[in-house]
Length: 104
Image 1 (tube, rainbow, N blue to C red):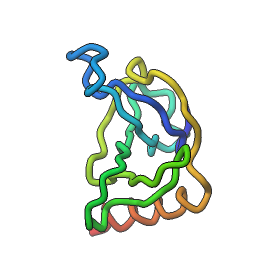
Image 2: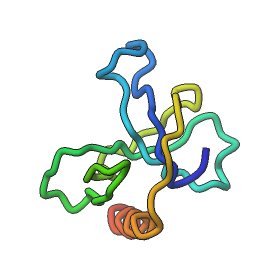
Image 3: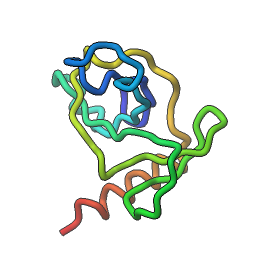
Image 4: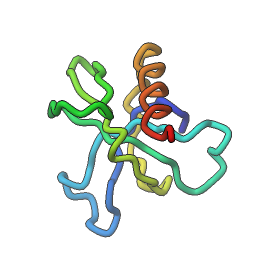
């Protein structure tokens, strides 16, 4: 599991593997921290909202958004399947957005 990969993730393991509990997430944890038991992820959605903390992307032929305002820590056992990786331009935009989001 590496930064900028997109995974199918079980968002809340307490609810089991129900469809509403699964979602696409982009890993935002730096690779240097991969030895910890959980990773930071930003959920992905196809719903558009005019929010500056959303990073637009195309993934598997669908227009979507990475929701940096919804970042959460997810245990590694909740990662179901790797689906791909974000394009390099989206990676740069995501880092820029995170930097601005957490700036003081």
